[in-house]
Length: 216
Ligand code: AMP
Image 1 (cartoon, rainbow, N blue to C red):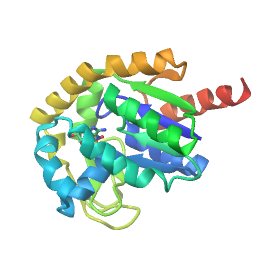
Image 2: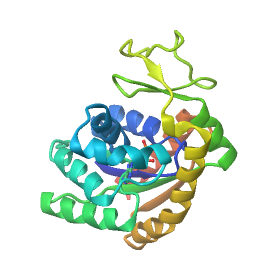
Image 3: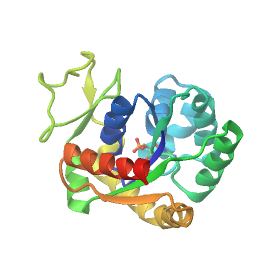
Image 4: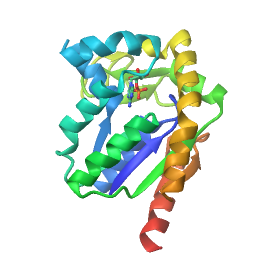
């Protein structure tokens, strides 16, 4: 199964991608996590990307596409892409890479939620420094404050989850997404889902769609 999750920051792509990866034994590929790791390891890509990320802007396509190409070959069982592609050139590059691997996308799922919900989810979000697991101070707190339930790592607030960067990230998303939705709509791959409710309710909706695709 080869899935793409589209949606604004805070809509829950990372959480849904984790659930999908577990259920279908596929690989969760998040370009945001790859970039944050590159920044933490101070690689060339990380050094080039960090200023864009802090401001909430998109990192240049060649850096992101390069990182993606390094890992995609390892996702033999299938993947769920979270945060990639973000614009049409990236979508075209993805298509070319997959063609080279003989892979067809199964579905592109676009998640949507109200702005007030997105902002509340982002400002309460905490992430594990070690395993990237995601928590929310209100809706999904860790058992012990500041500590990851899964690996015991330290939880932190992403710098781009603060108000100024959140606004920029939402604006970038509004600007880039219509062309992506058109691109995948024309290919008959696009499925739109409301993600206003809990992550479990959204997950059930995604699974229903995948089930229908399988039987159609
Ligand atoms: P995310 O974790 O998906 O919210 O991404 C965090 C930040 O990483 C974004 O605000 C961008 O600066 C950068 N980023 C992640 N994925 C991409 C991408 N596909 N293209 C460009 N920049 C990206």
